[in-house]
Amino acid sequence: MTTDVTDHPFTLEGKTVLVVGASSGIGAATSRLVNSLGANVLLASRTPSTLESVRDQLADPSRAAVLPMDYLEPESVTSALKNIRNVDHVLISAVADENKKRGAFLKLDEDTMRASFDKFWGQVNVVRAVVPRMTKRGSLTLLSSVAGLAPSGADSGLSVMNGAQAAVIQTGKSLARELAPLRVNVIAPGVVLTNVWKHDEQRSLAEWMREDLPVAHVGEPEHVATAAVAFMVNPYVTGTVLPVDGGLLLG
Ligand SMILES: NC(=O)c1ccc[n+]([C@@H]2O[C@H](COP(=O)([O-])OP(=O)(O)OC[C@H]3O[C@@H](n4cnc5c(N)ncnc54)[C@H](OP(=O)(O)O)[C@@H]3O)[C@@H](O)[C@H]2O)c1
Image (cartoon, rainbow, N blue to C red):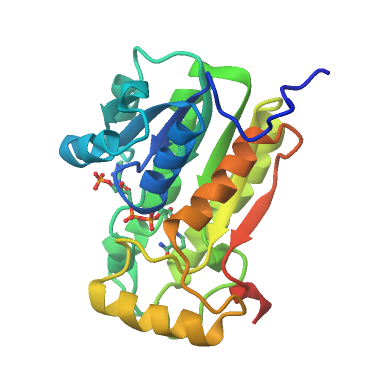
């Protein structure tokens, strides 16, 4: 067999996984899952103390290291990765204050509009710095949003952000060709209850998900973590965009 599928495809034993945005939400859930499946995990975000708390709650904290970085600063990313080699899989799930970047298209100030693309540029910074440090048959998983596939409603205030989410998808698909045989995939979450939502918003969103989504329950970071691991362990999947949205895109 030429690929690394074994009788136990859902293992990450001996693999090294970098998670950017590991201190919270989808990144923290993925860090816990990959570590429980045997991976060494590199936990990256801006805040060492929160990364340390995630590390301390892993199944095996001795197979984890904390890598403070600001993914919006290329020098910060390269400096955090300077002694890192042989990374097998990468998940980039960082996002800075996403909900602060919304507003009516004709009223948004220019700085806020441009900041809507921070997430796109942060992912670019990480990919450029990490690819030379990866094993040849590894994988990169980028985080977009269902809004990158079907733009959110007219009054969502997210017209520019929706463009940024679509940019992540198209760049991810392009990189699946350009960086091959490295695999590149994109996850497009629907609503997932994490710190991107304020406490009050989480309560009303939970009610809406239970009543209106086909799955009739809330979306949790662990649901997205499972999709991220599926991309890491399956050597035949690249250039794929996977909604993890409880059926939201069905309309
Ligand atoms: N939750 C949802 O409903 C939803 C829906 C659609 C798409 N998504 C996407 O899913 C991804 C993960 O979101 P989430 O809900 O898990 O968010 P989250 O819980 O708010 O976590 C965001 C993570 O990003 C890190 N971060 C923020 N700014 C950073 C920077 N400049 N450099 C490095 N790390 C930074 C944060 O840690 P520090 O503060 O320590 O840096 C934190 O670990 C994002 O791409 C988001 O757009 C989420």
